[in-house]
Image 1 (cartoon, helix red, strand yellow):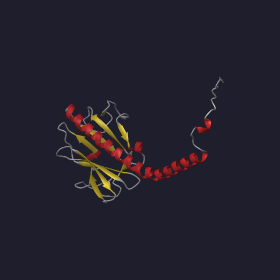
Image 2 (cartoon, helix red, strand yellow; image 1 turned 30 degrees about the horizontal axis):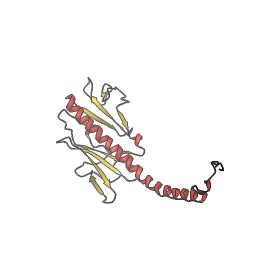
Image 3 (cartoon, one colour; image 1 turned 90 degrees about the vertical axis):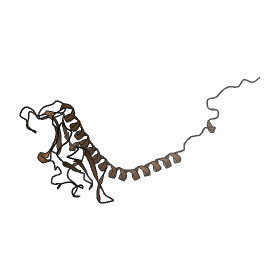
Image 4 (cartoon, one colour; image 1 turned 120 degrees about the vertical axis):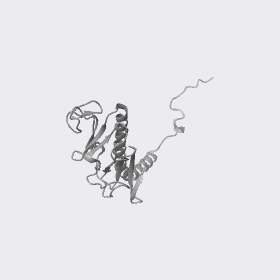
Length: 202
């Protein structure tokens, strides 16, 4: 009987694989898909950053509201239009005034409150302003984008605050507004709807 030897090369011609032409076609299709996606990403990213900034402001307002209720003392967000930032302050300190060096940030830090300061520079091309769209329904004049008296959203132990609105805009004509209802302290977010050309509550 004749011995049969196994060859690793045996049957290689039957194995399937990709040819160079197939690889080139796949790469071309992927390239076309990327080119189509890039403009959409360019339109989506500014909206995403603006929305993230607005939601963070609303979340930090809610943090201050709940902190005031829990600690039975005033908490506040202090807005600085010049530096495009705001601070979350949990205690106005011994002097009883907001915005002075003895204030205490919500993370326990003191002046200049590095850990309790939020900057809109972190969101790229987002800052105070309404994008030229005017006030939200029942809102006061927009001005520099902060309608709270003293540039301060101050929450008292009952969870309420004086009414006011923070307007944020991006570089693509987008705008959002975060408004506090004075009677309830409820925080609402509005967005400028480019299709409707009007403010819409989220």
